[in-house]
Image 1 (cartoon, protein in one colour):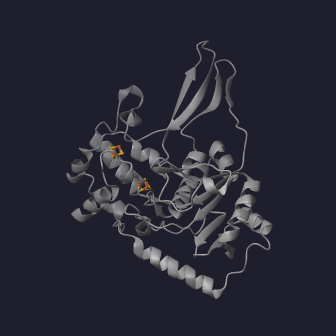
Image 2 (cartoon, rainbow, N blue to C red):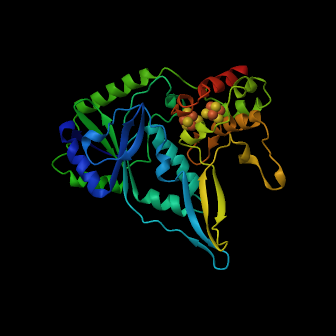
Image 3 (tube, rainbow, N blue to C red):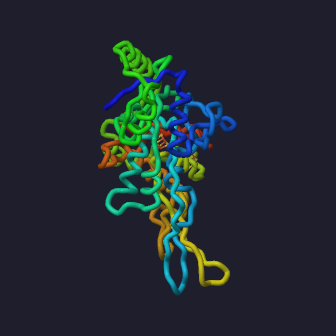
Length: 337
Ligand code: SF4
Ligand code: SF4
């Protein structure tokens, strides 16, 4: 993989090159938290942040959108949105790995047109980060992105070492001829030292070995209820999770009873309605059932990437109004064995 060096004082030239490729969206502080938003100038965003509340998946699967026009006589017609190029600048490795998981869900076999076209019109620019007290990406192997980005910026002090991940990234680097440099051996020593320091900063870890088997075999454990009794069933943990991908599809007709739309919106397996099927049967009728289901899902393996369906971003713990700690739940269950 090609690696180039960008002195930080020339970062504005990278930013301008990205802007010439598409709309740049980057982490912006909103109140106490961060959110990916469109930015026009360097002062509007930061690359030194913990996590956004809503992960980058919001750009590829919208929280709510109309996908088909419905006409009772003419049938269905896709709603085709105007395609625009978006650069996501400052994506952490865990979120890049989560997008790799979503790519498999939405683009393998029959591709989801909406997701696929937004993905092909996007550029992902990753940035190295430092863990806080909620991150456990290292223990699930999501603290480093091997693929899934166009450029990845590693902070080595006065410069960035940039890994170039594909043709879109190459096109940006080509625009920066005379701005980027060949890294020296001293730059690689700085990178190694930074990564060693970062690796030692992780304070939390998940017992991930055999986790799918452990969680599955202890499905009947009474320990689950200790946590599910506190759960409010609000679904916030699903909304903030970068790998949660369930959606609901509904149709509604206008008052003329002739035209309408088919829409989809993010869904949550914590909501009672999620497992409600025709005839009124609910195959996860209790909060305990729903709680165990989510932890089973997050503890299973994505066959395509070989990763857990949890990238250790810590969002579900940070934003749970009941104070339920995802890591504590799974490590408790693991400890039962
Ligand atoms: S965010 Fe917390 S309280 Fe809400 S559904 Fe998830 S675990 Fe339950
Ligand atoms: S389950 Fe929690 S820690 Fe894991 S990826 Fe989802 S939000 Fe992040």
